[in-house]
Image (cartoon, one colour):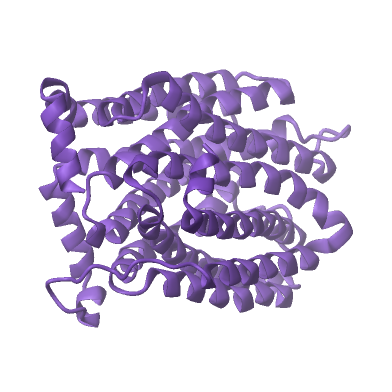
Length: 435
């Protein structure tokens, strides 16, 4: 898979910037969590489940609200310039975390986090829109898979190394490292050459952006290509938001208790790092196994998604009852083998189906559905846990929701699958014509 970077120098530069930037992102997450724990401490008003759910929602919802605008900007302006601008703008935002050192300033931290995440979705929409222009058609799936594997590797490395770095560097030092990664990413992107964006039949108007007209045009394009059901795949993987909250809860109350029976930060940190590193390992393995098990065609991508839902459900069903930390980590790996297959296959499917002029907006719509769904399920999962104080019951509710979502996906994508199955040659040609 790494050969796609050797064959495509422009993709190699874009991918290198992703590696550097995402390393800093995971360092940042560990530092933000550590800083919140230091300033806020245990909350008497909000249960542990909802606390974890709120952290995920605050991290994800700003990106959801920004995604329709981000996609339009990525389609209408220089994608290279947008990526560099977002990198440079995030440097002072990250450094402003250094000014947060009192409990009364936690609100400022959340504001900075929202701004950082909002710029992050603009960067990602531009990167996703630019990626197909840096590789040949035959290399697109491999490039998308490598990008997903990279995210997973950076999650695993960042979760483990970021936690270890807080000791010698301190929370402030980790934030400085994060700011430096954005500077390095911008310098790598400065040398990237991308083709000029294709002309649009209508001129850009800010009023269209603010009224979401541009985003609606992206939705119209998706409907014209008859891939709306496939585009909703990540949103239907939303119960994973509740599962990830339970991973954090388990790290705290199942694997992070001290000898006195109370949560011990010295044990919570390594447990949290190992479980999230396991998530990254599974997400990295999933797309690779999916590609080699069922292939890379459009029909194979739908098969990967279906199998991914089943594997994810099995993994998290086992996790609910795993009493040992390493066993729980293996369950998380298995679950996210399925999740990784769902993620890459669904992205590759719509990437091969939409016009280049709309890729940024379609990516934004894809991301919007995912972030809203993950956030809602994260909050619901936290509430169910606080009411029941049971990881097992909460996971059972989440698995029930996942079964309903997977069934909805299967029924909604059956017309696409039938079309591909009954006319494979014509369907493949049609897909090529639509690219």
